Length: 205
Image 1 (cartoon, rainbow, N blue to C red):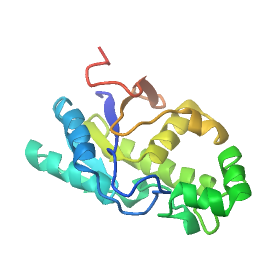
Image 2: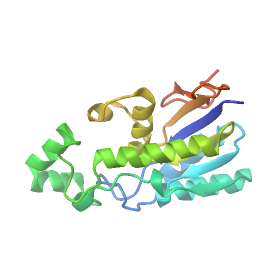
Image 3: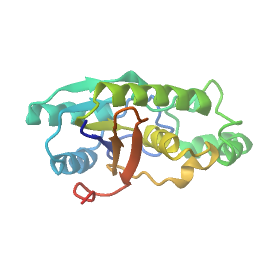
Image 4: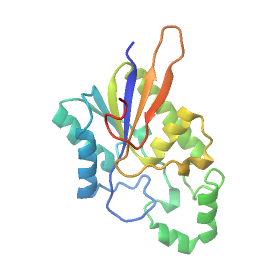
């Protein structure tokens, strides 16, 4: 079987400033949309597009899929983590109001999640399940997953067997592109490989 190639694309810059933007449905700025479109247009022929349903991912993904004449599937399990009571609030505002809580969160998010937030273990389990389903559904195909920084970090953590705490060390800027290739062989377990991270289409050659 042909290997499965999955490009991971983070959304571009968003409206709303420096907020805890998890489930908050901020659209991309015009510049952010252009960032994504330039990267998407650089991709080779694809079999499909999978996207988070949040508008900062879904709108550019659907626009691109229409232009290419391919399907775009919205998958809720690839939405960003929910920041609970901090959701949609300015980071600076939360830092001023709850300095010890936010310091603990930055230091150890596994044990100090925001109030009423989705926990990192639950987030990782959600993303990992969706990722395995994607590998099965699109086996042997070439697709792009348009999603969020947190989701991409979780996918890379699964691939590289990383613990949760140092995930902030993985830099995933707006409109960044990564490529994972999953190799298949008869009677052998699949072998996913990170081909490049925060690179450009064509870096696999």
